[in-house]
Length: 178
Image (cartoon, rainbow, N blue to C red; front, side, top):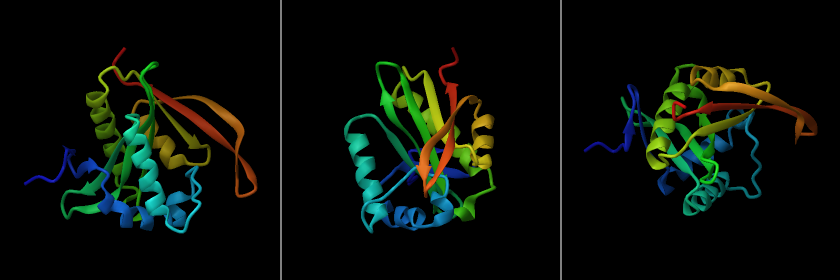
């Protein structure tokens, strides 16, 4: 039996499940994973806290969160998602992260493409997808470029992170072919 709701060449995807909390905890306590994430936790259980946030978005009908697995051994690789879906304006925000051992393999690009296709199935009227990344995150910039997104602007000193103001880039793509 195939455990995945979606598949690509090397990866399998299924909705994030409560059984993923230990994986979420491992990732979200790794400084390399969260280095470029705009995320702050208020408890000592970031996996549970992230799971709770996922659930709040899912219950509102405004998100799609997919756990990403390597098909060859079913190893958990990360999460790719669309969230803050706005039905009135037909847009959402794309986010993704992988555990460091899966960086540099093209998995993020593969996962983003599958997640965007899954989102079009969930929300057929989806028109625009945005991604907001830290300007220093070159790897994420490459993923977005390869997904066909375009840089729309830079938000100068938009976020205070560890006592330093950082710039954010706004990337966007039109996903329905118009």
